[in-house]
Length: 195
Image (tube, rainbow, N blue to C red; front, top):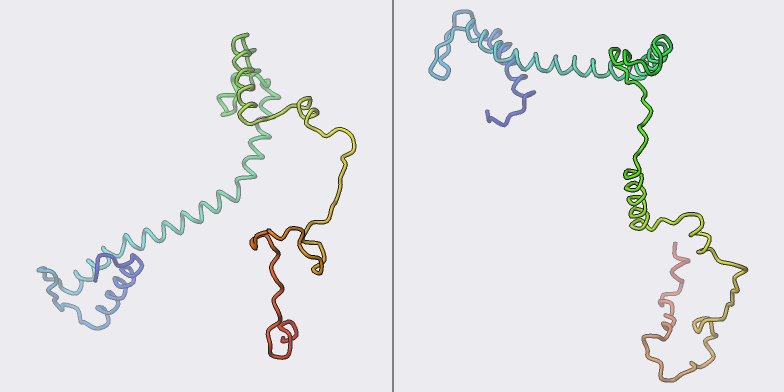
């Protein structure tokens, strides 16, 4: 058995070994394993001791998953209840009472007024950010909008000209000429009617 055997395989083999030993060998049978002699009862005890962490871990994992599901199930209820409790405590103690901190709720504080230097720094940062992101305000966007009605003219392209007319310039390269029509494959029916 390799060291890379899966945990489930090891656990199953430990259980199968115990049941096989109990059914196939009588009490008092001795076994020589890894240089140690075991009688059947001590061998079964050794196998049970080795199996216990596997079984315990699997059962604990299942219990953990059940508890996580239970926690996730009551999460929204707990959040709503805590919000109601906070509102109740704020009503009894006051919204800005520092005693709310004892109950785990933060006190709503008004932000401190910024100093002239802080306001200047904030304005400069905003200008730099708007320049980097090329953000425009309403007045700047007004200057970008088109004024009046646009004039649209449509003229036929050289590709729309009928095929019977000769090309305007005889010196045109073959790369700019439109591709020639490919004749249909011989064989009677066209490709579109062969379904």
